[in-house]
Length: 104
Image (tube, rainbow, N blue to C red; front, side, top):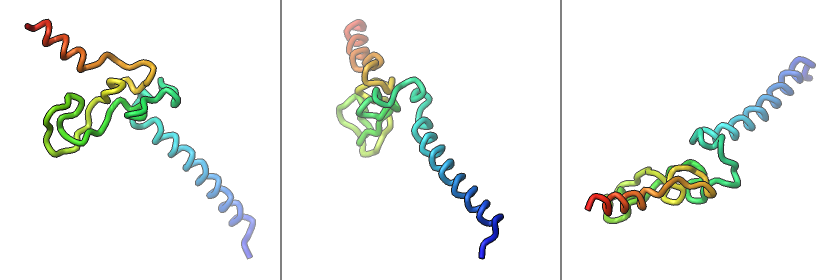
């Protein structure tokens, strides 16, 4: 037969497990980027899930072209690092094209 103290410990353990699970889920939601604090989940970029970064299948990343055989993390080419689908930062591709035009 279990004592009242053992039941109290068991109840406290169950309560702490539930609290731990909730805190862990919240941690993983916001830990990838501090920008998550400023972006509503509904506004997360669909390509990078709000982190502003993407894993590309080659070393070409957002620049395109020929790339080596290595997975590479770089800025998301949809939101350009903002993590937000409604407020993307300026495009690096457009900036690079403009710079080439000015440098000619």
